Image (cartoon, rainbow, N blue to C red):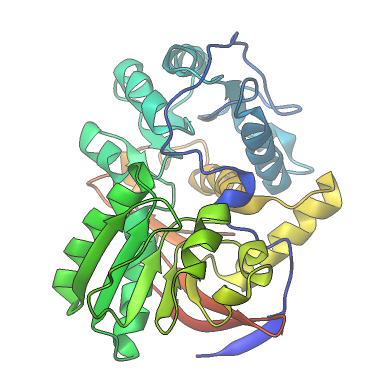
Amino acid sequence: MTHSMTRRGMLAGAAACGVLPMLSGCAAVGLGASTTPGAGGQATALLLPLTGAAAGVGQNMARAASLVTQGDEASAPKVYDTGDTADGAATAAKAAIAAGAKILMGPLKADQTPAVLAVAGRVPVITFSNDDGLADQGAFVMGITPAQSVSTMFSYARAQGITKVAVVARPGALGEATATAARQIGAAGGIEITAVLLTEPGGNLALNGAQAVFLPDGGKALAGFARSLNGVQLLGSVQWGITDIEADGNLAGAWFAAPPPDLFLPFADRFEAAFGEAPGVVAGLGHDAALLAVGLGNGKGVSRKGITRAAGFTGVLGGFRFLSSGRCQRDLSVLTLNAGNLSVLAEVTGT
């Protein structure tokens, strides 16, 4: 399926609001509990950084969540400030549980999540991190993971006859997780990984006969790698944004994974109208967390059984469903941008 729409600058990738979920904590900050207007006594709590280095991201997630319950603040989940540290996240979780929370949604970052799990007891934890390994520690992982981007792109690329792919990324958690996912998903799907290059942009790239290159990084790193690549199809992750592509002719015709535009763009319109800025994908997680909370209600649905219901949930980042393992399956789109038009090349379900 292919259709086009006018490019909307507000459709920004995760990089638009910081690639935060897999990063470690920063400086210590003071902790205080804060709520959305009129919230109180709800079964679901949001654990977000409202102060500290990631405050802008956390505040936008809280703003996005507030759009779900406008006019019905009594059903809004309560928001607790985690700050930037593991201790801050643990303190926020304790306060939420003491206030009656039956589900903890958050924290944002991978290095805070174990501290929340340690104090949560039997209360389910749905982390916003995109570190799939946290599922093995007992969390439900809601962030869009490197494996989900890889699965989406490899499924589409294989359908177009591509069987040899190289992975090129900066060193670090994102590159390493992407490389691991590419090897596993490629082996299962008939795609040979010809090279995995974890390097800084600007060097020589030996692709070993690859027909396509998967570039998970967004922003300046993406632009730097794209300058070194000619004659191969470029594949991208949810870390990309429209602003990355429109500013760089080297990325014209690239294919990249993204939330379904027909769901994300109306949300982006509402967010920008209300708050005067583009939301970014991570803010969409806050919206979908509040939507999930409303969907579960305050009764028996607020439980592990409710979280893992077979029907899953639909949000502005697409359909998603949690498995009993804690991992999440997502429905994502494959997009491209040419001549100012955003085209949906495919919709891939259950990645």
